[in-house]
Image (cartoon, rainbow, N blue to C red):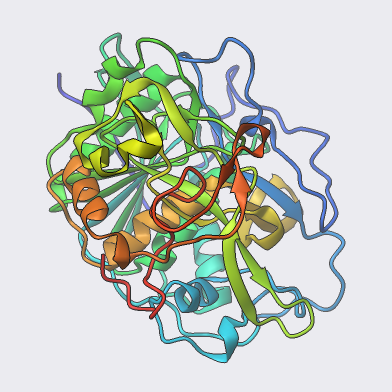
Length: 433
């Protein structure tokens, strides 16, 4: 079936607010150190196999003190992560000054080919300007009309990954949390791989039917761009026939990354054997100096044995841990909102624009961008995962912390249910998996 899509210019288009639009929540008024879940991240009973949720949570910037800065962290003295501090921690740049987010300025410079971000609902009118403001604040390579485009996906068909009809502008995401998700995803995938062509593919709704159509659109764009990554920061509870959707994530020369979730347990599509599952970590920082101290587990991060997916061949070496089931996550990165990242978003709750964001929705585009920057262009997710599991020493093995239902899992040497193989970069700081 031919898939029609619309490429939206960098200048964006006006919002179309229709009957299906999402309304802003009156509850989105946190203060620093208060973690808030937007409506899009609240899982609802009965959604499994039908609708997904985002895996994003945030702290507001309204209560921060001091004069906003024109570069670097918007408010001085708050040690939340920036593109440069992540580049320092994860070995994309040389370690400097304890990877202090208020000091380091060297951003990633790599990337090539293509990354497609797949999300629900429409944020196109603000996407380019928010991304431009973010890159200017942190000195990241700016985007152009050639390097960043928004694409509308059609409605999904009955067959997994199929599309129906022409693409039209989806209902607005403003104030729902999907807008925050989209700003996070494009800002951190671009920051980690600024030389890659970046697409934001917007699905018509948060249903699996529509999002898997959008995944197919994103896969086609990545293939046309010579290969790369598709990033999916959303998911939902498992259901017994989920494996019927697994073939959607098998397009040649595309590697799929998905969030492992923000609560103990497992979600789809991260448990698919054809997807790299991104779990969450905590980045501990000295509260007086701002120096990075350690990376350990994030207790709220998703992980465990899949309910309905069998162990893939690349996990045979950890069968003594996972048994007969697929184990997640495969890898992990920053996710704890209390040690989260700065995100620029102008639509969640105007006039506020700066947010500290966490959740495995951070880890997912960060991993997709880092893999792209490292030149990891495998023929499939399965091939990439096979390579990952054959080279565990290439990751930063996290051995401190706990996670899971009843906090039953412990991090330890090698693969575990809390952080998988580990975070980007070996302890030497050389990212070379």
